[in-house]
Length: 470
Image (cartoon, rainbow, N blue to C red; front, top):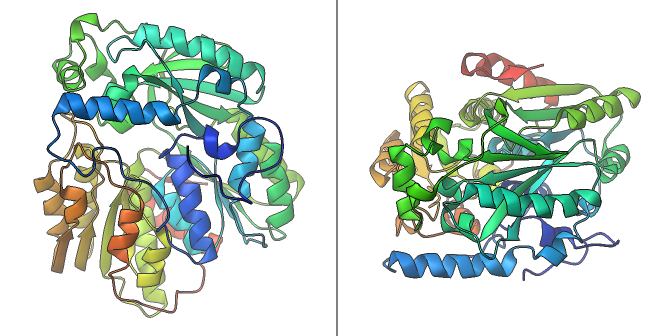
């Protein structure tokens, strides 16, 4: 059980947000990192090492058993699912931010570059949904249909008490590994702006301050199982394509073999929507509600449509370079972050340019290399590859990460702690803080960017990446 810090949990019935939102999930980590940066502190207290992080040579069956036991300690029980209150989760998110007036806000899909953009603007970032994990006692990684049956029963109970949610259940052994067989993953999307968000914006936004909605536009085959409950096998973050989760796929056989499953038992449910928004998309009701709220209170709303994570990562990295140089800094020192390994405050403290990889897949790292190849050279490149804790044919190897570091003209650094035991160990978020603290200070921090300036720069530099800013 993770300690709930006083002042970060709102009053009310149901489980505290700290207990509901999945440990290590993107929304949880990004809100925590952004809130700390706006307070002028780093992420040294964030994250905990996994059970096998100190023993990279542990046999695979022992490792899987330890990981599943650890997951069982933090997953929601069936009884706790009944106590989930999405309104309380929203209050927990907003209560993490300092109580002051802000010149804007970013809301929407989780993305590390969005957190960096929020810090450069001096504004909060708030998610349009959150992830949960719940126990699946008799589960199996190779039984997606049974996962759906178990998840549907949980969804019925959870949605009965949360009329403003849509639940997307994701069964993805390629990204979640053995956890797929002992827990179900539920991504909750608000279908309207939560009351706590509306109150926070009304109280904390300066007059006329913009609302910027970041929307993940990736799609994936989806099964609409019931009212406000949908299901998908696999996910974009796996680094694989939907066809790779077909029963006849050689890639699927590799994935299931690595997590103790059997492809002969793999019988996924038939999808009903061949190309719906993936699990981190923003619900149309949420966007419409945010737009209505902004219009009634005379706040401009801008939308940033992200076709793939690298588009926003590249746009924000280019923006940071321009911002730093405008303040008289070099803008020639790059840090390539990955997953939970980020620290926005240490980035601005050291005057670094941040490029965020969603995960350690070849697809993510390929895009980082392409961006670097087309960019003005950096004098130093520090790379923080987050070990995903699983094996997959879609993952980048350490040589590819070393190639990313090789773009530095003078300094080329790959974090050895992250690399030790890669890809099956785990590294806490605070590892990024430990690495970035060693960077020389480059103070003072540049004055905050104006939203109009940042959006114009993203519109200009992101156009060829497919980034749509409106």
